[in-house]
Image 1: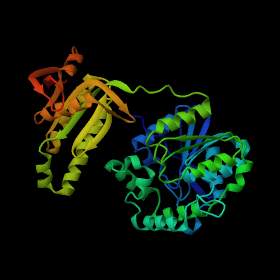
Image 2: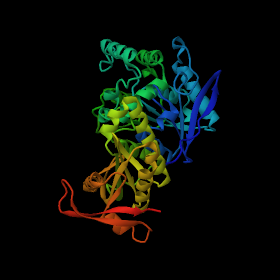
Image 3: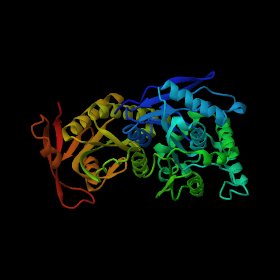
Image 4: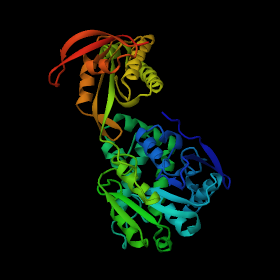
Length: 447
């Protein structure tokens, strides 16, 4: 798994602005995050990391944390940066990164500053991309689709009381609202990106801002993207932008998510790539051949009861840390975790078997036993994950493995012939929910 880019600092007045640069494409692209951000934690979210690397595949991507958020200098809550100061921060980051001209991309609250920058500095703005954004957020007599005061007050109160618990995930990323990993990451992201007071003050400032007067002065080619069922931002905001920015291209995409990197992110990234480069990425295959690995802790319920919640959580973290280390070593890809289970995919069956053996052997030092199962088959690609009958077969094989054993289907055994792996036959087995009988084999040598 590639390492995230190095965090550097640009000086804007007396403030230090954290930024990163990734990619070497012919066009500089400055991404302005909405509301809050934390550059380094962002890379820990797989969907976010994948989307950022996709942007960097056709551009020289420049990321930064606005002052008062993330890794940039903190500021007093009553001295949060104005839109003008934020423009100065963007210029400072561009200068530090050696960028004379760039395309600007703003998601949500990152849009108004980009609009003002494009109108003020047209010579430094190659293009403008606005994702689920706005020129004005609050309702007004001539802006009826804005947020009513009672709604914004309720959200601000919610933030004040529940910040750092993953507040608003259901509106920002409804496709992940029941995903415990996403909720844990978003809660941690909130705590490290801004304090509760700063988060509320930034949102309050967003409700007070209005850059509609700048729209007629924008001359840069502009792309406006909005998902039709966005829970956080009504698409009327984007329609207004499209009507008031000359020559703007407006594209509505299916989906409910507000964060650009979750949900059907590829459709949005395709539009951005085509807008900036004139071409789209070749479509990803919807089916691939992969080896799936399932592993889980033997007698986990009993061990959890013996150890207690705190110690059990520590043990799980040690198990996952070891499994992820071996996954990197054998070039696998983590797909999911649930309870004490671990699900990964590989593009080579021999490496998958050796990874499973390394995990089952390594966890013994933690005082636990793990069983693992593998199968190779055609998998359906579902965003960052894989699915289909091959995945179900892999899970069923794992369920039949003995403590400390790596069990594989006959497909895996046949594909690794000549690799030095040795197996012991476990006979024909019936896999729950899978037609027919399957010959299974236990790994006896994985050196």
